[in-house]
Amino acid sequence: MILTITANPSVDMSYQLDKLNIDGVTRTDKVIKHAGGKGIHVGYVLHDLGADVVHSGFVGGKLGEFIEEGLEQRGQKSKFIKIKEPTRNCLAILHEGKQTEILEAGPTISQAEREEFIRKLDDISAGCSVISMSGSLPKGLDSSFYEEIIAYAKNHGIFVAVDTSGQTLKDVVNAKIKPDLIKPNETEVADLLGEEISKDNIKDALTKAPLKDIKYVIVSLGSQGAVVKAGDRVFKASVPKVVAINPVGSGDSSLAGAIFAIDKDKSPEEVIKTSMTCGLLNVLTEEIAHIEIEKFDEYFEKIQVEEIK
Image (tube, one colour):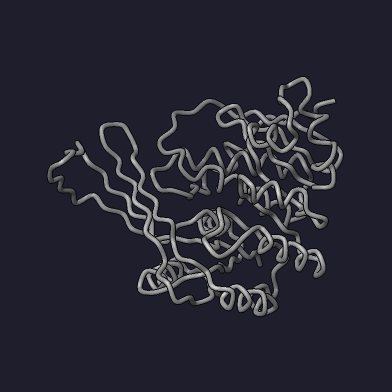
């Protein structure tokens, strides 16, 4: 079983409009509402792949209930901690070939609610071989929350992945006990190391401190694929050109593919190809964080992986 943790989930609402009337009324019947947040998106794709998934994090109020009910309707388990403040909404307005997003900050997690989560980790993670934590942290939590879960996972022989950014990523990478997998982009790697990153030095960059002790570092290059460190080896993955329908959620889909293959004890090359395939399949569907599994083998064979010597 794989546990996803989304500390600041949301009810994601998408409005599809022919035109957005500024300072006026706009009507639409094209509305999508679903449980969202990066970790939940990872779980959606893991479920598409056939994995047994359980979701956790913090939810509150009627919107929190909506998230739990939505996951149940999808046949996915959840073990969220209930909080006093309500879960947030996140709104995406698709109009005239553009996407405008309005993201609420979300609730503040109290110290008691944080402690309850840590206290219940044994139950939340029971039977799990992988813990995947995704997204930014809500108010009331800092990077020590992720660091404590990483230490718990390592002490219990559980593979742990973290997909976050900013100061939280820096703190996690530089902590004494490090995660097994991170998924930064080129800019974030450069920021972590304090140096410019290019194709000529990226292998050296990924194999020195503080990244050398993290087994998997997946550096997204968008439509150009990725550079991936697996142990002491570094690979370049290339993906075929496709007409993107909706790229939103591709990073989460890519992470889902990686941890699914790692959980199945696949080779580094297979882990990378599975990761890239899931990210690619996501852009070919309108639905966020979804892959059409019947197309998996076709695109898996199109992914090129070459070790950087």
